[in-house]
Length: 257
Ligand code: HEC
Image 1 (cartoon, rainbow, N blue to C red):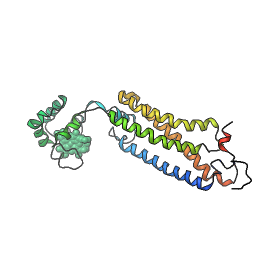
Image 2: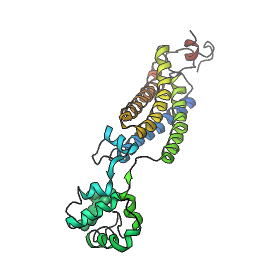
Image 3: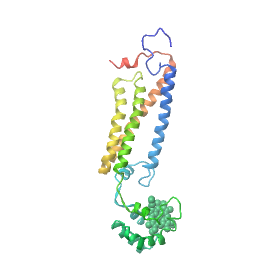
Image 4: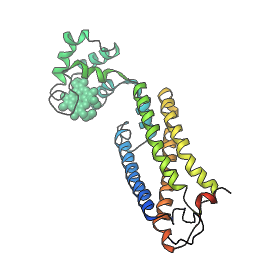
């Protein structure tokens, strides 16, 4: 960098010294890949919650609110496991579920029913629930109440701490951008934090009332969108805009006005 420059004229994304650019763009590359993986993971976990691929409102409702109209065992017995066992056996199992699937009747009666009609697969095929054990049956016989408070507390604090760190540095790097109107810079930096909080609060609201699921969807889309815009502008200015040799001046000083 030439030494006859005005003070801090290099203090902007296109004119930063190369070591700093390497630091910033290396970070953005790794974070960008991480965000794509996070998207994939959401598709794999929440995306399949309603049994259909792709993320939908139903997935969010099933993940956080659950399916309180009945247990998984009962809906399977009326669904894809409909052909298994005799109608009497299915009816007995459904009555037992409605009574809370008490363990007292397991040994005497239901262990047998399950081993007769279900165990040729459940208990011998790896990867599907083993119905020779009461605990495994009990798990699918419970009404699905969605995410537990413990799960929500854990993922809330991990999300808030972890993602704020990402947004802090992405926003910090973006604050060196040139030619971005001040109001746009402020919005792009503030929106991810605001919608991260909206997103996390919406999980709790959805657990309580499924009609809040749309808030989760909007929160996630808006903060990913804002982070993506900052990502592309920052990378463009550091790696491409810098090639015209122009000196852009102090980016922070420009925002004082
Ligand atoms: C011919 C093999 C076979 C038999 C017999 C069978 N199942 Fe299944 N079951 C499967 C397979 C494969 C899956 C996983 C795919 C799916 O969810 O449809 C499954 C999944 C399930 C699930 C979902 C478990 C989970 O954790 O998601 C339940 C509940 C279930 N079966 C109940 C039963 C009951 C009750 C019986 C006996 C009346 C039974 N099944 C008999 C093959 C079988």
